[in-house]
Length: 153
Ligand code: RB5
Image (cartoon, rainbow, N blue to C red):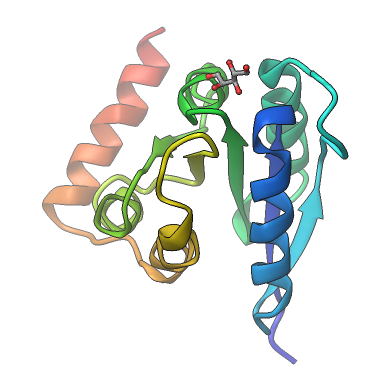
């Protein structure tokens, strides 16, 4: 049997309800297994704590995993996640950028904003991210340059 891809899923209080919707969607698909790192209700929490937890869990099996982080805008989560080496978190508000994030930029994390008015597009954004594959050639060369910048720190 094909191994399922693990999706590490995290949200702060602002993203909690959308996280539950995204989880339901992912659980309806045969190829994914969700690991939910919280939060588990709408009581206020700090998004960097959730981003850190998601990154830690992502590194438990990075080859077989992707992550989706949700806060009010997605901005805080993406900034926090991108502080960690080897995390390439793309903030996407539409299907095109979600797809490009993996195809051209090899993003391994997707950040979404629950207070952004695009809820009806969320499943299409998530599936565009999950179904895209990284391109080689000039895109790989550029991605390797990003990794070099990381090494320069
Ligand atoms: C929480 O109120 C909000 O600031 C947070 O969810 C996020 O939007 C930060 O970027």
